[in-house]
Amino acid sequence: MIGLFGGTFDPIHFGHLRPALDAFEALGLDELRFIPAAVPPHRAAPGIDAATRAEMVRLAIADQPGFVLDTCELERPGPSWTVDTLRLLRGRYGADRPLVLLVGSDAFARLPTWHEWRDLLALAHVAVMARPGAPLDEAAFPPGYVAARRVAAAAPLQERPAGHIYVVPVTQLDISATRIRRLLRAGRSIRYLTPERLVAYIDRRRLYRSRTDT
Ligand code: ATP
Image (cartoon, rainbow, N blue to C red; front, side):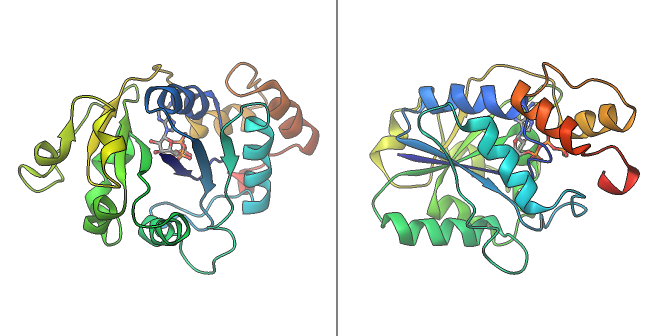
């Protein structure tokens, strides 16, 4: 089974990385593909260019076997709709290979606002990673939608290519990219919130220091 983890990663941090590793192991993934968004449709455009955000992902995951940077959304013009990315990957891996989309619980709560969202579960499973301050919230889904698809263990995800929702237990880390950008803008340290290699990279390039970066 292949895992797909999309995000702005502006910048990537331990709140992405440790839960991603927990999910990688709990789900028995062959690989986990980190997919930086080019033009995130649901938020203001990030101030740091896509190539730099992707480079930071590459640096952050370089030492972890099975973690892969996938720049497919950066190579495509226009908005990065997740459903289009899943269609592309479904074409790449064939109809039968289980795919699982990892999302934090805050992103999951907004899933029914995503472009052609009903096709997401036809193309992949969804694994939800609980995030501090964002309890699992099904209010935006049609009644019964989540309950009909939810499974209590990871094993059923291996048995079909798509369609299940699983809440995967992950380390709770109250870290956000917003907070990291704020700290940098204020001249504060971001050490221990993201890998040391990234702390040095961001410092060297003086990223996120000015208002236009954030
Ligand atoms: P920002 O603060 O700029 O909104 P972010 O820290 O939420 O950024 P994103 O790149 O927007 O990071 O998130 C990508 C994915 O990672 C989303 O599915 C999000 O829910 C998840 N995620 C981000 N931070 C955490 C965290 N601390 N714990 C669990 N999931 C997280």
